[in-house]
Length: 217
Image (cartoon, rainbow, N blue to C red; front, side, top):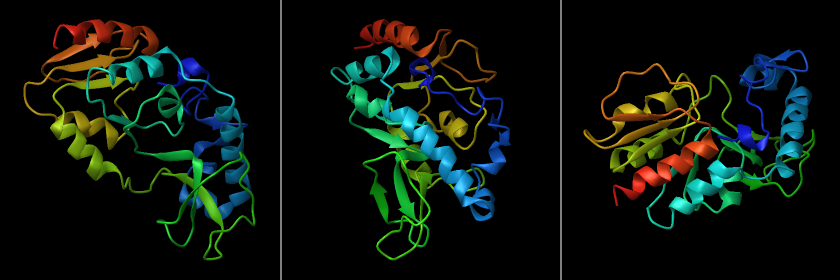
């Protein structure tokens, strides 16, 4: 979803960041082994995000909120949906612009700067970590995501390979018979009824989707 804004995914980077495998910067084990490297990685991502603007896809989805009750479930950790004006955004994998306590996961802080450093502590005195769901960690927001999915009258999937679980499994919890749209330049290999594929990038795809949804109003 955010590629057109210039933000790269791990897949875009070939699973590497400055010759470090994702296992070295995005797992609990990496945090225990080298927290300075992990903090540096997310500081760089955060610095880039602060200078990044929403693309046509984000803006188009926000505009749909004028005519539909739009709930966004995103695997992205950026805030570009919010910057575009969307109000109901559920971040499955955490938020880059937040940090949380390493002893109390309910202590979450919004950062007003891009650097998170060793020695930055929560009110209980423990080191702050990125508010990110790392590989191998549970996804606390999945329960809410399942509820949103089950209640949806229209389900739209944008810019994902549908290979990363548990998010990829959400489609299986939609109500039978509802319209399902998949927007991606590469057609995902899934077998599901009532799917309409829009093989475009997010910006152009949301433009086409908007015209299709006009027919359903």
